[in-house]
Image (cartoon, rainbow, N blue to C red):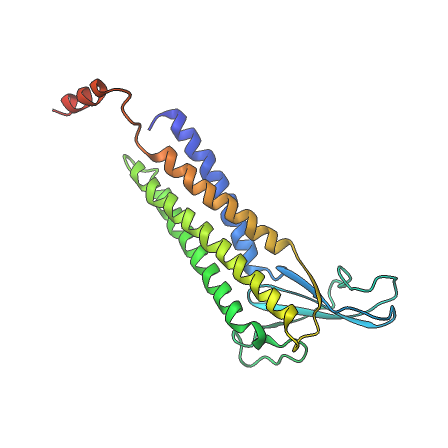
Length: 223
Protein backbone atom coordinates (compact mmCIF):
# COMPACT_ATOMS: atom_id res chain seq x y z
CA UNK A 1 0.00 0.00 0.00
CA UNK A 2 1.34 3.42 -0.95
CA UNK A 3 2.12 6.08 1.62
CA UNK A 4 -0.80 8.20 0.40
CA UNK A 5 -3.24 5.34 0.87
CA UNK A 6 -1.74 4.52 4.25
CA UNK A 7 -2.28 8.11 5.41
CA UNK A 8 -5.89 8.05 4.19
CA UNK A 9 -6.53 4.73 5.94
CA UNK A 10 -5.15 6.03 9.23
CA UNK A 11 -7.24 9.21 9.08
CA UNK A 12 -10.32 7.13 8.28
CA UNK A 13 -9.59 4.77 11.18
CA UNK A 14 -9.31 7.78 13.49
CA UNK A 15 -12.83 8.93 12.56
CA UNK A 16 -14.08 5.36 12.91
CA UNK A 17 -12.53 5.21 16.37
CA UNK A 18 -14.35 8.41 17.29
CA UNK A 19 -17.58 6.86 16.01
CA UNK A 20 -16.98 3.76 18.11
CA UNK A 21 -16.45 5.86 21.23
CA UNK A 22 -19.66 7.79 20.56
CA UNK A 23 -21.54 4.53 20.05
CA UNK A 24 -20.24 3.18 23.36
CA UNK A 25 -21.20 6.38 25.17
CA UNK A 26 -24.70 6.23 23.68
CA UNK A 27 -25.21 2.61 24.71
CA UNK A 28 -24.07 2.96 28.33
CA UNK A 29 -25.71 6.31 29.14
CA UNK A 30 -29.39 7.00 29.84
CA UNK A 31 -30.01 10.41 28.26
CA UNK A 32 -31.64 9.30 25.03
CA UNK A 33 -34.90 11.09 25.76
CA UNK A 34 -36.22 13.50 28.40
CA UNK A 35 -39.89 13.19 29.39
CA UNK A 36 -42.22 15.44 31.32
CA UNK A 37 -45.98 15.81 31.89
CA UNK A 38 -47.97 18.87 30.93
CA UNK A 39 -48.65 21.16 33.88
CA UNK A 40 -51.83 23.16 34.32
CA UNK A 41 -50.65 25.14 37.37
CA UNK A 42 -47.29 26.73 38.03
CA UNK A 43 -46.97 25.39 41.57
CA UNK A 44 -47.51 21.73 40.67
CA UNK A 45 -44.93 19.06 41.38
CA UNK A 46 -43.35 17.88 38.17
CA UNK A 47 -42.14 14.32 37.52
CA UNK A 48 -39.21 14.81 35.16
CA UNK A 49 -37.49 11.77 33.68
CA UNK A 50 -34.78 10.73 31.28
CA UNK A 51 -34.01 7.24 30.08
CA UNK A 52 -31.80 5.15 27.83
CA UNK A 53 -31.53 1.57 26.65
CA UNK A 54 -31.33 0.05 30.12
CA UNK A 55 -32.88 2.26 32.79
CA UNK A 56 -34.93 5.34 33.57
CA UNK A 57 -34.24 8.12 36.08
CA UNK A 58 -37.10 10.14 37.57
CA UNK A 59 -37.18 13.18 39.84
CA UNK A 60 -39.95 15.04 41.62
CA UNK A 61 -39.44 18.77 41.03
CA UNK A 62 -41.46 21.62 42.54
CA UNK A 63 -42.32 24.14 39.82
CA UNK A 64 -42.14 27.84 40.67
CA UNK A 65 -41.54 29.42 37.26
CA UNK A 66 -43.87 30.53 34.50
CA UNK A 67 -43.25 27.51 32.29
CA UNK A 68 -45.78 24.74 32.02
CA UNK A 69 -43.22 21.98 31.52
CA UNK A 70 -40.26 20.76 33.52
CA UNK A 71 -37.72 20.30 30.76
CA UNK A 72 -34.21 20.78 32.05
CA UNK A 73 -35.25 21.23 35.69
CA UNK A 74 -33.81 17.93 37.01
CA UNK A 75 -31.52 18.79 39.95
CA UNK A 76 -28.21 16.97 40.06
CA UNK A 77 -27.86 14.30 42.73
CA UNK A 78 -31.61 13.92 43.34
CA UNK A 79 -32.45 11.27 40.77
CA UNK A 80 -34.20 7.98 41.39
CA UNK A 81 -32.85 5.55 38.78
CA UNK A 82 -34.02 1.99 38.21
CA UNK A 83 -33.41 -0.57 35.49
CA UNK A 84 -36.27 -1.62 33.28
CA UNK A 85 -38.30 -4.47 34.69
CA UNK A 86 -37.40 -6.83 31.84
CA UNK A 87 -33.70 -6.29 32.55
CA UNK A 88 -34.02 -6.55 36.33
CA UNK A 89 -37.20 -8.41 37.40
CA UNK A 90 -36.66 -7.61 41.09
CA UNK A 91 -36.97 -3.85 40.61
CA UNK A 92 -40.30 -2.16 41.25
CA UNK A 93 -41.65 0.47 38.89
CA UNK A 94 -44.08 2.78 40.63
CA UNK A 95 -44.11 5.75 38.27
CA UNK A 96 -43.15 4.34 34.91
CA UNK A 97 -45.11 1.59 33.15
CA UNK A 98 -42.25 -0.30 31.53
CA UNK A 99 -44.43 -2.86 29.77
CA UNK A 100 -45.77 -0.24 27.35
CA UNK A 101 -42.44 -0.29 25.52
CA UNK A 102 -40.91 -3.60 26.59
CA UNK A 103 -40.54 -5.06 23.10
CA UNK A 104 -39.05 -1.86 21.72
CA UNK A 105 -36.63 -1.48 24.61
CA UNK A 106 -35.34 -5.05 24.37
CA UNK A 107 -34.99 -4.78 20.58
CA UNK A 108 -33.12 -1.46 20.75
CA UNK A 109 -30.73 -2.77 23.40
CA UNK A 110 -30.06 -6.04 21.55
CA UNK A 111 -29.39 -4.28 18.23
CA UNK A 112 -27.05 -1.82 19.99
CA UNK A 113 -25.11 -4.75 21.46
CA UNK A 114 -24.76 -6.20 17.96
CA UNK A 115 -23.38 -2.83 16.85
CA UNK A 116 -20.71 -2.91 19.57
CA UNK A 117 -19.88 -6.49 18.61
CA UNK A 118 -19.30 -5.49 14.98
CA UNK A 119 -17.10 -2.61 16.16
CA UNK A 120 -14.95 -4.98 18.22
CA UNK A 121 -14.57 -7.50 15.38
CA UNK A 122 -13.78 -4.73 12.91
CA UNK A 123 -11.18 -3.27 15.26
CA UNK A 124 -9.49 -6.67 15.59
CA UNK A 125 -9.30 -6.98 11.80
CA UNK A 126 -7.99 -3.42 11.48
CA UNK A 127 -5.32 -4.06 14.13
CA UNK A 128 -4.17 -7.26 12.43
CA UNK A 129 -4.02 -5.49 9.06
CA UNK A 130 -0.98 -3.50 10.20
CA UNK A 131 1.05 -6.71 10.01
CA UNK A 132 3.26 -7.58 7.03
CA UNK A 133 1.18 -7.94 3.83
CA UNK A 134 -2.14 -8.06 5.64
CA UNK A 135 -3.80 -5.07 4.00
CA UNK A 136 -6.59 -7.35 2.79
CA UNK A 137 -7.95 -7.45 6.36
CA UNK A 138 -9.01 -3.82 6.00
CA UNK A 139 -11.82 -4.89 3.66
CA UNK A 140 -13.68 -7.12 6.14
CA UNK A 141 -12.96 -4.51 8.83
CA UNK A 142 -14.66 -1.84 6.73
CA UNK A 143 -17.71 -4.06 6.27
CA UNK A 144 -17.95 -4.72 10.01
CA UNK A 145 -17.78 -0.99 10.71
CA UNK A 146 -20.50 -0.28 8.15
CA UNK A 147 -22.69 -3.02 9.68
CA UNK A 148 -22.09 -1.50 13.12
CA UNK A 149 -23.31 1.87 11.87
CA UNK A 150 -26.41 0.33 10.33
CA UNK A 151 -27.24 -1.53 13.56
CA UNK A 152 -26.81 1.68 15.52
CA UNK A 153 -29.19 3.68 13.36
CA UNK A 154 -31.75 0.85 13.53
CA UNK A 155 -31.46 0.96 17.32
CA UNK A 156 -32.01 4.73 17.16
CA UNK A 157 -35.17 4.28 15.11
CA UNK A 158 -36.50 1.57 17.42
CA UNK A 159 -35.88 3.85 20.40
CA UNK A 160 -37.66 6.68 18.62
CA UNK A 161 -40.69 4.45 18.10
CA UNK A 162 -40.46 3.45 21.76
CA UNK A 163 -40.66 7.08 22.87
CA UNK A 164 -43.60 7.69 20.56
CA UNK A 165 -45.43 4.69 21.98
CA UNK A 166 -44.83 5.85 25.55
CA UNK A 167 -46.13 9.33 24.78
CA UNK A 168 -49.25 7.94 23.10
CA UNK A 169 -49.93 5.40 25.86
CA UNK A 170 -52.67 6.15 28.39
CA UNK A 171 -50.72 4.23 31.07
CA UNK A 172 -48.05 6.91 31.39
CA UNK A 173 -48.16 10.54 32.49
CA UNK A 174 -45.62 11.68 29.91
CA UNK A 175 -46.89 14.13 27.32
CA UNK A 176 -43.89 16.25 26.35
CA UNK A 177 -40.45 14.99 25.37
CA UNK A 178 -37.24 15.77 23.51
CA UNK A 179 -34.19 13.75 22.54
CA UNK A 180 -31.05 14.40 24.53
CA UNK A 181 -27.28 14.07 24.10
CA UNK A 182 -27.08 10.25 24.20
CA UNK A 183 -29.43 10.17 21.21
CA UNK A 184 -27.18 12.69 19.43
CA UNK A 185 -24.12 10.54 20.21
CA UNK A 186 -25.81 7.53 18.62
CA UNK A 187 -26.66 9.49 15.46
CA UNK A 188 -23.14 10.90 15.20
CA UNK A 189 -21.67 7.44 15.83
CA UNK A 190 -23.76 6.02 12.98
CA UNK A 191 -22.52 8.71 10.58
CA UNK A 192 -18.84 8.18 11.43
CA UNK A 193 -19.01 4.39 11.45
CA UNK A 194 -21.04 3.96 8.27
CA UNK A 195 -19.25 6.57 6.17
CA UNK A 196 -15.90 5.59 7.67
CA UNK A 197 -16.53 1.96 6.74
CA UNK A 198 -17.36 2.89 3.15
CA UNK A 199 -14.28 5.12 2.77
CA UNK A 200 -12.08 2.47 4.37
CA UNK A 201 -13.34 -0.07 1.84
CA UNK A 202 -12.57 2.29 -1.05
CA UNK A 203 -9.08 3.06 0.24
CA UNK A 204 -8.25 -0.61 0.86
CA UNK A 205 -9.23 -1.83 -2.62
CA UNK A 206 -6.32 -2.51 -4.98
CA UNK A 207 -5.65 0.11 -7.63
CA UNK A 208 -7.28 -0.64 -10.93
CA UNK A 209 -4.89 -0.84 -13.93
CA UNK A 210 -4.80 2.37 -15.98
CA UNK A 211 -4.58 0.50 -19.28
CA UNK A 212 -4.44 -3.11 -20.54
CA UNK A 213 -0.64 -2.98 -20.96
CA UNK A 214 -0.18 -2.30 -17.25
CA UNK A 215 -2.15 -5.43 -16.36
CA UNK A 216 -0.11 -7.53 -18.80
CA UNK A 217 3.18 -6.21 -17.40
CA UNK A 218 2.06 -7.11 -13.86
CA UNK A 219 1.27 -10.64 -15.01
CA UNK A 220 4.68 -11.05 -16.68
CA UNK A 221 6.51 -9.78 -13.60
CA UNK A 222 4.92 -12.49 -11.47
CA UNK A 223 6.59 -15.15 -13.67
